[in-house]
Amino acid sequence: MVGVSFLIMLLQYLGVIEIVSRWLTPVFSSFGLPGEAALAYVSGYFVNCYTAMAVMSSLNLDMRAVTILAVMVLCSHNMIVETTVQAKTGSSAVRIVIIRTLSAFFLAFVLNKIMPGQFENSVSDTVTSENLTFVEMLKSWAWRTLKTVGLMVVLVYLLTVLQRVLNEYGIIERIADFLKPVMSFFGLPPRTAFLWLVANTLGLAYGAAVMIDETEHGSTTKEENDLLNHHIGVSHSNLEDLLLFTAIGGNFLWMLLSRWVMSLLLVWERKIELRLHHFNRREIK
Image (tube, rainbow, N blue to C red; front, side, top):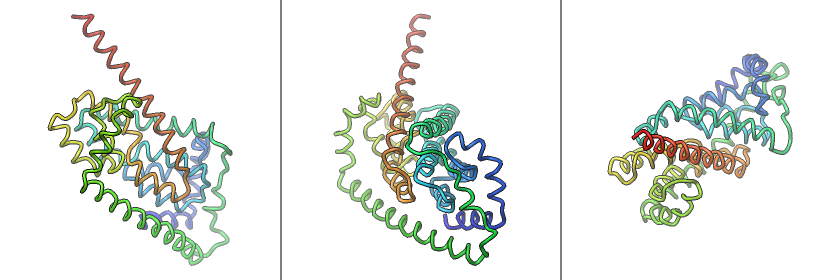
Protein backbone atom coordinates (compact mmCIF):
# COMPACT_ATOMS: atom_id res chain seq x y z
CA MET A 1 0.00 0.00 0.00
CA VAL A 2 2.82 2.39 0.87
CA GLY A 3 4.52 1.60 -2.44
CA VAL A 4 1.42 2.39 -4.46
CA SER A 5 0.86 5.58 -2.50
CA PHE A 6 4.49 6.68 -3.10
CA LEU A 7 4.10 6.04 -6.85
CA ILE A 8 0.98 8.22 -6.93
CA MET A 9 2.88 10.99 -5.15
CA LEU A 10 5.63 10.82 -7.80
CA LEU A 11 3.05 10.95 -10.59
CA GLN A 12 1.52 14.01 -8.92
CA TYR A 13 4.91 15.72 -8.75
CA LEU A 14 5.58 14.96 -12.42
CA GLY A 15 2.14 16.27 -13.45
CA VAL A 16 0.92 12.93 -14.80
CA ILE A 17 -2.08 12.81 -12.45
CA GLU A 18 -3.17 16.23 -13.64
CA ILE A 19 -3.18 15.05 -17.27
CA VAL A 20 -5.12 11.89 -16.38
CA SER A 21 -7.58 13.94 -14.37
CA ARG A 22 -8.29 16.35 -17.22
CA TRP A 23 -9.10 13.46 -19.55
CA LEU A 24 -11.29 11.49 -17.14
CA THR A 25 -13.02 14.19 -15.09
CA PRO A 26 -15.81 14.71 -17.70
CA VAL A 27 -16.65 10.99 -17.35
CA PHE A 28 -16.25 10.55 -13.61
CA SER A 29 -17.99 13.82 -12.79
CA SER A 30 -21.22 11.98 -13.65
CA PHE A 31 -20.53 9.94 -10.54
CA GLY A 32 -19.49 12.91 -8.40
CA LEU A 33 -15.80 12.12 -8.69
CA PRO A 34 -12.69 13.83 -10.13
CA GLY A 35 -10.85 12.10 -12.95
CA GLU A 36 -7.95 10.83 -10.86
CA ALA A 37 -10.43 8.71 -8.88
CA ALA A 38 -10.29 6.31 -11.84
CA LEU A 39 -6.79 5.30 -10.71
CA ALA A 40 -8.12 4.19 -7.34
CA TYR A 41 -11.04 2.31 -8.89
CA VAL A 42 -8.94 0.46 -11.46
CA SER A 43 -6.28 -0.52 -8.92
CA GLY A 44 -8.95 -1.86 -6.59
CA TYR A 45 -10.78 -3.62 -9.42
CA PHE A 46 -7.79 -5.76 -10.39
CA VAL A 47 -5.98 -5.99 -7.04
CA ASN A 48 -7.79 -5.28 -3.76
CA CYS A 49 -9.23 -2.61 -1.49
CA TYR A 50 -5.83 -1.83 0.05
CA THR A 51 -4.35 -0.60 -3.23
CA ALA A 52 -7.44 1.52 -3.84
CA MET A 53 -7.10 3.00 -0.34
CA ALA A 54 -3.46 3.77 -1.05
CA VAL A 55 -4.44 5.87 -4.05
CA MET A 56 -7.40 7.46 -2.25
CA SER A 57 -5.22 8.50 0.70
CA SER A 58 -3.00 10.39 -1.77
CA LEU A 59 -5.93 12.34 -3.22
CA ASN A 60 -7.73 15.33 -1.74
CA LEU A 61 -11.25 13.86 -1.61
CA ASP A 62 -14.04 15.02 0.68
CA MET A 63 -16.35 12.66 2.59
CA ARG A 64 -18.90 12.56 -0.22
CA ALA A 65 -16.35 11.60 -2.88
CA VAL A 66 -14.62 9.06 -0.62
CA THR A 67 -17.98 7.41 0.08
CA ILE A 68 -18.99 7.15 -3.58
CA LEU A 69 -15.59 5.88 -4.68
CA ALA A 70 -15.45 3.42 -1.77
CA VAL A 71 -18.85 1.99 -2.78
CA MET A 72 -17.55 1.45 -6.30
CA VAL A 73 -14.45 -0.33 -5.02
CA LEU A 74 -16.40 -2.39 -2.48
CA CYS A 75 -18.76 -3.58 -5.21
CA SER A 76 -16.06 -4.65 -7.65
CA HIS A 77 -12.63 -5.18 -6.12
CA ASN A 78 -10.18 -8.07 -6.43
CA MET A 79 -12.27 -9.19 -9.37
CA ILE A 80 -10.07 -12.00 -10.69
CA VAL A 81 -9.59 -13.84 -7.38
CA GLU A 82 -13.09 -13.33 -6.01
CA THR A 83 -14.80 -14.25 -9.28
CA THR A 84 -12.85 -17.53 -9.25
CA VAL A 85 -14.19 -18.26 -5.75
CA GLN A 86 -17.76 -17.50 -6.75
CA ALA A 87 -17.47 -19.63 -9.88
CA LYS A 88 -16.29 -22.56 -7.74
CA THR A 89 -19.31 -22.17 -5.47
CA GLY A 90 -21.94 -22.28 -8.20
CA SER A 91 -22.20 -19.07 -10.26
CA SER A 92 -21.33 -18.01 -13.79
CA ALA A 93 -18.02 -16.10 -13.77
CA VAL A 94 -19.12 -13.88 -16.66
CA ARG A 95 -22.41 -13.02 -14.97
CA ILE A 96 -20.69 -12.19 -11.68
CA VAL A 97 -18.20 -9.85 -13.38
CA ILE A 98 -21.02 -8.07 -15.21
CA ILE A 99 -23.32 -7.57 -12.23
CA ARG A 100 -20.52 -6.45 -9.91
CA THR A 101 -19.11 -3.96 -12.43
CA LEU A 102 -22.50 -2.54 -13.42
CA SER A 103 -23.57 -2.34 -9.78
CA ALA A 104 -20.50 -0.23 -8.98
CA PHE A 105 -21.29 2.39 -11.62
CA PHE A 106 -25.05 2.28 -11.04
CA LEU A 107 -24.68 2.91 -7.30
CA ALA A 108 -22.13 5.67 -7.90
CA PHE A 109 -24.56 7.41 -10.25
CA VAL A 110 -27.47 7.08 -7.80
CA LEU A 111 -25.44 8.18 -4.77
CA ASN A 112 -24.24 11.24 -6.66
CA LYS A 113 -27.90 12.16 -7.17
CA ILE A 114 -29.22 11.51 -3.66
CA MET A 115 -26.33 12.21 -1.26
CA PRO A 116 -26.24 15.65 0.38
CA GLY A 117 -23.78 18.11 -1.14
CA GLN A 118 -22.53 18.30 -4.67
CA PHE A 119 -19.53 17.43 -6.81
CA GLU A 120 -16.53 19.64 -6.22
CA ASN A 121 -13.45 18.98 -8.30
CA SER A 122 -10.63 18.86 -5.76
CA VAL A 123 -7.89 18.18 -8.30
CA SER A 124 -6.18 21.54 -7.95
CA ASP A 125 -5.41 21.03 -4.26
CA THR A 126 -4.04 17.56 -4.88
CA VAL A 127 -2.12 17.49 -8.08
CA THR A 128 -0.72 20.98 -8.49
CA SER A 129 2.96 20.85 -7.62
CA GLU A 130 4.35 24.06 -9.11
CA ASN A 131 4.59 25.76 -5.72
CA LEU A 132 5.98 22.76 -3.85
CA THR A 133 9.47 21.30 -3.91
CA PHE A 134 9.90 17.54 -4.07
CA VAL A 135 11.07 17.47 -0.44
CA GLU A 136 7.94 19.35 0.67
CA MET A 137 5.70 16.94 -1.23
CA LEU A 138 7.61 13.99 0.23
CA LYS A 139 7.17 15.29 3.78
CA SER A 140 3.44 15.85 3.24
CA TRP A 141 3.03 12.38 1.73
CA ALA A 142 5.00 10.72 4.53
CA TRP A 143 2.89 12.33 7.26
CA ARG A 144 -0.45 11.45 5.58
CA THR A 145 0.72 7.90 4.90
CA LEU A 146 2.01 7.39 8.43
CA LYS A 147 -1.35 8.41 9.92
CA THR A 148 -3.35 6.25 7.49
CA VAL A 149 -1.16 3.15 7.80
CA GLY A 150 -0.97 3.46 11.59
CA LEU A 151 -4.74 3.57 11.88
CA MET A 152 -5.18 0.66 9.46
CA VAL A 153 -2.62 -1.50 11.28
CA VAL A 154 -4.46 -1.03 14.58
CA LEU A 155 -7.86 -1.78 13.02
CA VAL A 156 -6.69 -4.85 11.11
CA TYR A 157 -4.95 -6.25 14.20
CA LEU A 158 -8.01 -5.79 16.41
CA LEU A 159 -10.33 -7.24 13.76
CA THR A 160 -8.06 -10.26 13.31
CA VAL A 161 -8.13 -10.93 17.04
CA LEU A 162 -11.93 -10.60 17.04
CA GLN A 163 -12.28 -13.05 14.14
CA ARG A 164 -10.02 -15.60 15.86
CA VAL A 165 -12.06 -15.36 19.06
CA LEU A 166 -15.35 -15.77 17.19
CA ASN A 167 -14.03 -18.84 15.37
CA GLU A 168 -12.39 -20.39 18.43
CA TYR A 169 -15.54 -20.33 20.56
CA GLY A 170 -17.97 -21.22 17.76
CA ILE A 171 -19.70 -17.85 18.05
CA ILE A 172 -19.92 -17.44 14.26
CA GLU A 173 -22.04 -20.60 13.96
CA ARG A 174 -24.39 -19.38 16.71
CA ILE A 175 -24.75 -15.97 15.10
CA ALA A 176 -25.46 -17.68 11.77
CA ASP A 177 -28.35 -19.61 13.36
CA PHE A 178 -29.70 -16.36 14.79
CA LEU A 179 -29.50 -14.67 11.38
CA LYS A 180 -31.54 -17.24 9.47
CA PRO A 181 -34.74 -15.11 9.61
CA VAL A 182 -32.76 -12.16 8.23
CA MET A 183 -31.86 -14.26 5.20
CA SER A 184 -35.53 -14.38 4.20
CA PHE A 185 -35.60 -10.58 3.99
CA PHE A 186 -32.66 -10.61 1.60
CA GLY A 187 -34.32 -13.36 -0.42
CA LEU A 188 -31.70 -15.90 0.60
CA PRO A 189 -32.29 -19.50 1.74
CA PRO A 190 -31.84 -19.97 5.53
CA ARG A 191 -29.12 -22.58 4.91
CA THR A 192 -26.87 -19.88 3.46
CA ALA A 193 -26.71 -17.96 6.77
CA PHE A 194 -23.34 -19.40 7.77
CA LEU A 195 -21.71 -18.67 4.40
CA TRP A 196 -23.28 -15.18 4.42
CA LEU A 197 -21.66 -14.52 7.78
CA VAL A 198 -18.29 -15.88 6.59
CA ALA A 199 -18.40 -13.59 3.54
CA ASN A 200 -19.30 -10.58 5.67
CA THR A 201 -16.59 -11.17 8.28
CA LEU A 202 -13.73 -12.83 6.40
CA GLY A 203 -14.55 -11.69 2.86
CA LEU A 204 -14.53 -13.78 -0.31
CA ALA A 205 -10.78 -14.18 -0.72
CA TYR A 206 -10.01 -15.07 2.91
CA GLY A 207 -13.22 -17.04 3.39
CA ALA A 208 -12.79 -18.95 0.13
CA ALA A 209 -11.65 -22.20 1.75
CA VAL A 210 -14.63 -22.27 4.10
CA MET A 211 -17.13 -21.46 1.36
CA ILE A 212 -15.76 -24.01 -1.11
CA ASP A 213 -15.59 -26.68 1.62
CA GLU A 214 -19.22 -26.07 2.61
CA THR A 215 -20.24 -26.32 -1.04
CA GLU A 216 -18.33 -29.55 -1.68
CA HIS A 217 -19.92 -31.16 1.39
CA GLY A 218 -23.40 -30.35 0.11
CA SER A 219 -24.36 -28.03 2.95
CA THR A 220 -26.04 -25.86 0.33
CA THR A 221 -27.21 -26.48 -3.24
CA LYS A 222 -25.76 -24.87 -6.35
CA GLU A 223 -28.89 -22.76 -6.79
CA GLU A 224 -28.74 -21.56 -3.18
CA ASN A 225 -25.06 -20.66 -3.61
CA ASP A 226 -25.85 -18.78 -6.80
CA LEU A 227 -28.43 -16.64 -4.98
CA LEU A 228 -25.94 -16.01 -2.18
CA ASN A 229 -23.25 -15.01 -4.69
CA HIS A 230 -25.56 -12.38 -6.19
CA HIS A 231 -25.81 -10.85 -2.74
CA ILE A 232 -22.25 -11.11 -1.45
CA GLY A 233 -20.78 -10.16 -4.83
CA VAL A 234 -21.57 -6.51 -4.07
CA SER A 235 -21.84 -6.75 -0.29
CA HIS A 236 -19.13 -8.66 1.56
CA SER A 237 -16.25 -7.99 3.96
CA ASN A 238 -18.48 -5.55 5.83
CA LEU A 239 -16.29 -5.73 8.91
CA GLU A 240 -12.71 -4.96 7.93
CA ASP A 241 -12.97 -3.19 4.56
CA LEU A 242 -15.94 -1.06 5.58
CA LEU A 243 -14.25 0.14 8.76
CA LEU A 244 -11.03 0.91 6.88
CA PHE A 245 -12.85 3.00 4.28
CA THR A 246 -14.63 4.76 7.14
CA ALA A 247 -11.25 5.47 8.71
CA ILE A 248 -10.06 7.32 5.58
CA GLY A 249 -13.18 9.48 5.42
CA GLY A 250 -16.13 7.48 4.06
CA ASN A 251 -19.62 7.44 5.54
CA PHE A 252 -20.30 4.01 7.10
CA LEU A 253 -24.09 3.94 6.66
CA TRP A 254 -24.12 5.12 3.04
CA MET A 255 -21.48 2.53 2.11
CA LEU A 256 -23.30 -0.32 3.86
CA LEU A 257 -26.96 0.41 3.16
CA SER A 258 -26.52 1.30 -0.53
CA ARG A 259 -24.89 -2.08 -1.22
CA TRP A 260 -27.46 -3.93 0.88
CA VAL A 261 -30.23 -2.42 -1.23
CA MET A 262 -28.40 -3.30 -4.43
CA SER A 263 -27.76 -6.87 -3.30
CA LEU A 264 -31.41 -7.28 -2.31
CA LEU A 265 -32.51 -6.18 -5.79
CA LEU A 266 -30.03 -8.52 -7.46
CA VAL A 267 -31.15 -11.55 -5.45
CA TRP A 268 -34.86 -11.00 -5.99
CA GLU A 269 -34.29 -10.39 -9.70
CA ARG A 270 -32.35 -13.65 -9.87
CA LYS A 271 -35.12 -15.52 -8.00
CA ILE A 272 -37.75 -14.27 -10.44
CA GLU A 273 -35.50 -15.22 -13.36
CA LEU A 274 -35.00 -18.75 -11.99
CA ARG A 275 -38.72 -19.22 -11.35
CA LEU A 276 -39.57 -18.18 -14.90
CA HIS A 277 -36.91 -20.56 -16.18
CA HIS A 278 -38.34 -23.47 -14.17
CA PHE A 279 -41.88 -22.58 -15.29
CA ASN A 280 -40.86 -22.53 -18.96
CA ARG A 281 -39.17 -25.91 -18.59
CA ARG A 282 -42.34 -27.41 -17.14
CA GLU A 283 -44.40 -25.92 -19.96
CA ILE A 284 -42.09 -27.47 -22.56
CA LYS A 285 -42.39 -30.89 -20.91
